[in-house]
Image 1 (cartoon, protein in one colour):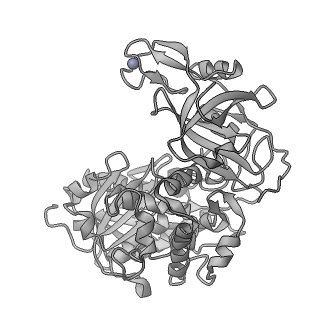
Image 2: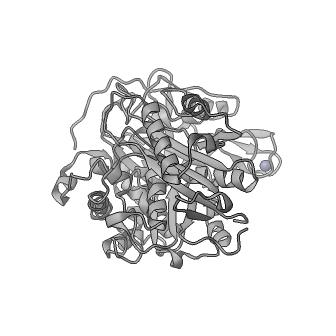
Image 3: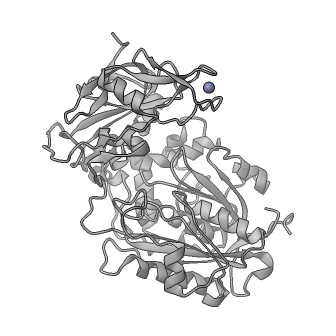
Length: 372
Length: 143
Ligand SMILES: [Zn+2]
């Protein structure tokens, strides 16, 4: 970054399996908590970034269901913003990058980032439904390849078959998620330990994924405030944004930050389905190609291990916050605010999205020296 | 999990566009058909608006061998799968003539169970009812 830009605070709503409250109520809870955490008030906010996408069953293309957007946030908070954007089909990591751009350009002083998820009653989360397949969907939906993470399951089968891993290795991921979730007061699975036999006996969803390899759809929202170093409120605890990149050129994050994977203290890796967590351990060369499951098998991803992964329980433990939970944990780990689950306070990698669509953010406790 | 679940969900009917019509017309005739760029000779994916190589817009339809390389495979167990019963086996594969082009296919016999990534498949197209012709994968080279 040429400008010193930080996440100044983070906020969260409760996370619930179902709710009588609407999605906007969760979103506003999170937004107000983020403002309070950053030490600013509503009138300070002059920028907004969201990424409404797959908010609930049936809404992968945002034509269905109730999305939280720039317009709805401006309405519910009565905010006359200088700038705002909804990033179509992107992720919380992209929200950070986009806010950083607006701050570096001087467009905004305080950018609110917000993402809400919801379980819409009466819609089957796994299947959705319509009798015609338009656009790119015509190549997948008639086959059912859009259902229940089929494309990730098919990829997991290829990976596991090629490199000799099995469901024990998926269990290692799920087990770590549940154990870490026990230390996350917000996690839907915090009081629900899972044993190996229950995991193995659970019904299959899309082989090799069983029920517990899929994250739990929830109602919830999380939000952050970003600003430039010179505007940092006195009460705020900053995590400095030192790098970001996208899946096509992932290593740009190291060029930008001057870091290497060896510098990482923690990694929050997207785990909407358990097998997805392996992608970027391999992708960043932290493990040899095909060897990420061994990293879990050998305990390196555990708290206190070589590179603790998903210290908050991941989506598999916390609930389907679609990457906001990963970003929040990266923030908390980088600012030494993760409480009983705090690891070494250092560079925190956050990755959100599938193998062919991921983006990345690096958060650090110390203000970058080279930035203005 | 060998139990079959009856299913009433309709199989979504593909709605072709100008780009994908060659593919779906080929499917109806039982053949894997793509477009080849007349400028640089690269094959185009069914939905590609132009050639991804030279950005040319002139194509000729070409019937391919139907051979494909197995990449991924899953067996779906959730209820609500369109147009059939569960469990249903799906494969993800790469067109042999240009592995950059990926396709999804049904495995209606379960015969891909013994295969590994990288093994050859033969793609044909089957009438799934309601005018929907979908790719079906079997082990081995095309006949
Ligand atoms: Zn061309």
